[in-house]
Length: 339
Ligand code: ASP
Image (cartoon, rainbow, N blue to C red):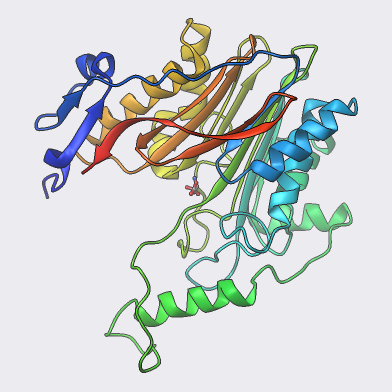
């Protein structure tokens, strides 16, 4: 198969275009979006679904809490929201109709990390990831072992599938094929064939320059049971270096794992790139890897100087930022545009 849409994509940013290889047929358009920066003492950023998370995280920082408390509890609030279908309680389930959650956390001041993958029945994987970090000598627990660990720490099992998510899964299952035994009800309008993705990434820096980050997700909707994406993988879905900055991602997990995205963003910042440029440089690696047909992916980053930014492969992503005065939602800069 070739790249059916590549001729209709625009590579935005002439600087980017000059160094992206293997993109025959993609038009280039000069593009630059300056992101106003308001350096202050405290800063929290998140993916576009994190407005409540940045507000909660900022309130924790202003009350004297650590960046770790701020990002974990900010994201836990979104995990609790049944209307947020890509994270925690109410997240869209796997192909068998079971919700499996992934999360990671990193603390800059200690350099510690924790993660859980394919965790069932526990609505706040971010809190379990924190406990893996603080209460084990390991970094990553998955599946049944992660669940047993959570139960040992007093978490309670609950059904994470809301009625709304169950209905969406059932419709997906019934419309999947006309060669299986599942049949859609008559007169029901088919849903869009896409499988939504959704994840929250949240990063914070405090007045001392300490940085922490979290990424949490229910993963690709209707995924293969046991499939784990980038979100709980330290270096892919999240990376924090207290001397440099932090980065995280949302979007196609497989693409991100292959470029070890969040770590790459932090390394580009270490070399002197701004957060926004570091995100764009890493997205170029995805474009190079996939040649004409990259799946969508977004990065979010902040640095030690409290500059921040976000970039996405395809135009349309947003991110949130709170500098202590107010929370704003901004458009991420983009590399390619589907016309
Ligand atoms: N990155 C997540 C995953 O691949 C999904 C997403 O962000 O939408 O599991």
